[in-house]
Length: 219
Image (tube, rainbow, N blue to C red; front, top):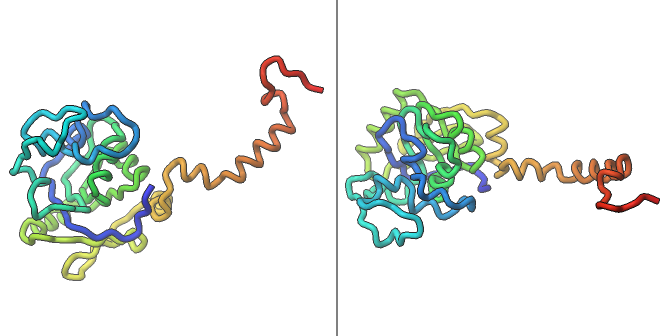
């Protein structure tokens, strides 16, 4: 997965609490496990005026001009500003896939659903927990200043605002290391490839019968 070191971008404010995973990516689009191609259907039920269906040409669908994702001032946003309990509902991993595929790199919210929170780290997204007062102040600043950007520095664990002031955040050391190095569960396993190969070689000598093919005999 992509490394996360420092990311700077426009902030999109999603002023709604309890955004569930079906809001993020509706169930009818959960037909692939490729992790890509879901960005065009992010927030589908609110982003478009018609009902979204798989394999539809989304460029021909009517856009909801009132939905925040469709407003030109938030085009190409990289930081999602959200409210309480973001990512609740079902445990679908497609939710962080859709956010990542659209282009979001970090999420700022007071709280998250546990499974969604964990899935973000495993898919290259950085979910940051900030207190409600800080989140509320950021909503005010974002909505008052078009093109409002934040710089998220994972290594320093700081968010740098346009005026140069900073907001500190905490993150689990293990998860931080994984994001900084672009390591998902598969990547972590591959870091131990040599150890795994050495164990297999030793095990073949210690217990060769485990590796015998049917009807094979030992000599």
